Amino acid sequence: MSDGASSLAEVADDRPRRRYRGWGGIALLGVFIVLVLVGPWVVPHDPLAPAPAAKLSPPSASHVFGTDQLGRDVFSRVITATRLDLGIAFAAVSISLVLGTALGAAAGWAGGWTDRIVGRLLDTIMAFPLFVLAVGVAAALGNSISSVVIATAVVNLPFYARQSRAEVNRRRGAGFVEAARLAGTGPVAIVALHIMPNVAPPLMVQSSLNMGWAILNAAGLSFIGLGVRPPQPEWGIMVSEGAANIFSGEWWLFVFPGAALMLAVLAFSVVGDTLRDRLDPRRR
Amino acid sequence: MTAGQHAAGTLLLRRILVGIPSLVGVVVATFLLTRALPGDPAAYFAGPAATAASIEEIRQRLGLDRGITDQFILYVRDLVRGDLGTSLLSGQPVLDDLLRRLPASLELTLLALMLASGVGIPLGIAAALRPGSGIDGVCSVLAMIGQAVPTFFMGLILVFVFYYTLEWAPAPIGRLDIIYAPPRALTGFWSVDAALVGDIDLLGRVLAQLVLPVVTLAFFGLGPLARMTRASMLEVLASDFIRTARAAGLPHRMVLWTYAFRNALIPVLGTAGMVFSFLLGANVLVEKVFGWPGVGAYAIEAVLASDYAPVQGFVIAMAMLYLLVNLAIDICSSIIDPRMSFDE
Image: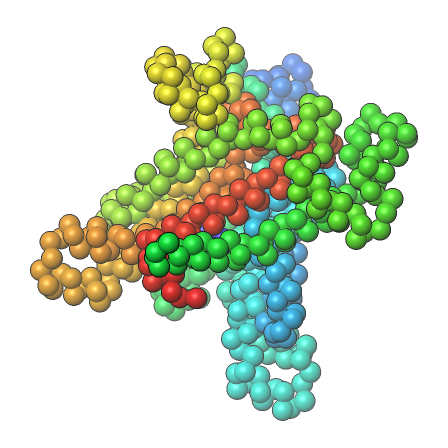
């Protein structure tokens, strides 16, 4: 099959005006990280408390993002959801980073059959449209948050594994590896202590670029009703719940959580691009 | 058979053979997914309203009382026969349901791919011809936003603006308002069918329903195509043979289209395949937003009702479709670039 799936993030893209964009992305990401850390304590209202008297009120001074069908404060719900949305994506990316890197390193170091089997496994994952596979995995594992995490991690695995395999394979015969081997270092220690530090920077870039995709994937799964359940505030579900109110003109229910999703994805992709430019001297 | 035809036949055969390991992988993976169900797969397939007796019957029918190898053989046998099980929701064989709904999804996906290519590729070329210019900036920002906006959010924004506020678009209730009769099924693509029977009014209504979902999907697919076209064009334009062609005094147009564009197109084709796969995934979300009666909406209904056979059938069908598209792209690439046929 055509080997293009990772190029969504990697398509050569060297352009001007990136410096401002980079700082903007970092600032935005900073805001999201602060919200993850302190969000639940700074919101003006209880994100779960219904207030039937104030239901479906448009944005105002007391409810800056308005209220939903139960009178809950949309602003508080959007802020509180940051932790869950970014948490799911972070958990998924961490799993695929660790597992994918280990798998790829094993394949790249051992070569031969290990390499062939790992390669087949990755090809199989890539043979599915990724969101379709994520739906299948999440459905098979049962309707829970952890299956959304696992589904997102599985479909992301190949990106890390391929990169790690290529980098380890390339350095397998390098001088510093030979030196470590002569010094009596075991293969696991060579890969972990000598090769991995060299492979880490590109994998970090990959993780940052991948976070945005993981956020979209997880929110998409909850949008169709998998994973997170109401009344828990989560951006995908909030957009899904707000969709019905479009036809009565209550736009604030879907616009704010949707915009939060978009900004989070933008922040990670801009930061990822900036990191890549910094780490790759050819693109500087 | 001429030598040329013979070579083309061998090439086609080789491409098909290359796809077989992926096919095997897909079959094994879906089998494992089925068996990875938490709890009892028979109970899952039987659905929430099943009795102990019906679960037992399904267990035997699926061969779940046998060893794992036997189960796999049974599974492959059913697949080869086209037996994907029965949907509990519709009571129909899953294959029939999928085949009936597939044209709706494909019409959406293919039109979106055409629109995304029709906008993304020229945009990428324009950006490559004037790097750093305003058009390059537009290209870059569009690509970035297209990838960052969740497709379902984009769809809802379009519905809110063009249906609710401006009242330009029809209600997002599927392929056609139910008060109108759909065109006679010829291809299953209602826009094509309406055009074939020459019913202009109907064609207009079908297209009106298509506009918003197609734009939603195309906006999502635009970015990778524009970026890849730009990068590929830049690389080709900087290459020696273009310099030579220019130095030889060939007309600017000829250099650009006959030499540069044709060479730049090859990686773009690969990207188009990738975008097609993204669109198949995004379709699931867009169909939900627009009440589109395609395979994605079918899969969602099934997932939420714990009706597993349709979900599994959907996943397999999409993987097969993607494999076929990749095959088609490989063949197109070797037509555009004759060198590729001799490479292996």
